[in-house]
Amino acid sequence: MSWAGTYDASKTERVLLGARAAHAIAVEAARLDRHSVFLICSGSLDATSGICDAAAVALGARFTGAFKHIGAHSPRNDVVAAALEARAAKADLLVSIGGGSQIDGAKVIQFCLDANLQSEDELLAYALRPEGPAPSKSIPEISTRAIAIPTTLSGAEFSQIGGLSDPESGAKEGYLSPGFSPQSIIFDEELALHTPIDLWLTAAIRSLDHAAEGLCAPNTYPYLDECFKGAIRLLAKALPAAKADPSDPVARALGFQAVWTVSAGIGRVVNGASHGLGYVLGGFGVAHGHTSCVLLPAVLKWNEPVNEARQRPIAEALGRPGVSASEAVREFVKSLGLPTRLSEVGIAEEHRRKIAETGAAHSVVAGNPRPVGSPEDVLEILALSD
Image (tube, rainbow, N blue to C red; front, side, top):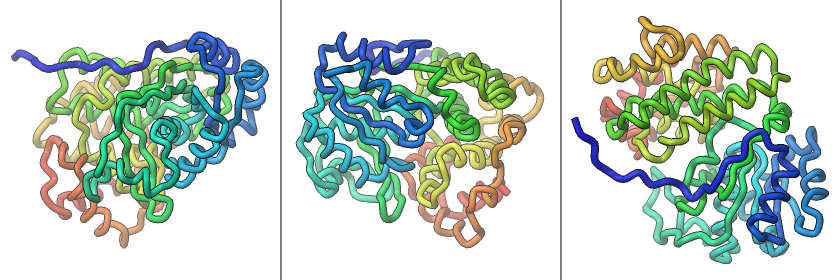
């Protein structure tokens, strides 16, 4: 078999390992010759770590403000509000500090600044919505850049998509630009110790989902396969160690290495029903990491008739050769004290028909290795999550 295609590297220039965040922000701002640095920071993280004050001191006159109020799933109204404050501060560099909500929010804020967007309606013209109309406009080249300091293992810092949510319905929408890749990524395992261990672990399962569905993707190839398998092996070491000792910075650093490893395939291979149905569950208030906890084992089980051989390396990388990938993933998730059933994440029986109808029409679900042709197929998957 031969492989043909193009691998587009991202616009991220460098990754800083083991750096202390406040000092590294100042160093990068000086290197990039930026003079008005605006922080997009998790409010809960700042309350426990004081990172915004520390960054302000390190930046000195370069510090121009901070926004700490982007909610879970990056509600569109929060992001637009942050963009208005960043514009008023004349920001020429954004720094996201926190999880996927802050990182994705900063991506879209970059575009809002570039295009001088003032409202949600203006922004919606560029939205990718699986269940809605195609965007009427495309995002041009981005000039405003950002630095990302992740404190979870979602992997958002390696994606060119900024995912927001509708503040009323909770429905997901995406904004795509190569320029959304942060110019620098700073891994500070000491800062990450402030992330509660449950959040740390659940976000990591999202990265496990990237790796597992990546291995099963029809357009993967050997380089990416090795990255996916390596990421799973690292997660299999890092997550139990972090659970055993949440204060261990080495375990947190190893988790960052796992996400960095899986990032080679993020946005470059087709995702399947675990990702697609996860977006649908997000509209019901289920956190991304939790969606992967309950859906990934079920989707792997449902897909076994068409790709059981492709799934075997997943179980092997988790240290469970000889068992099914579905069983190995479910055991691993359960060993971390995370939910494995829909009922455990608040999805009641009456929600399932709506989830099935929406999921069957979802563009990401359409990439599943075993075709999902109807709401009844989705209901079969959901039943495997019981």
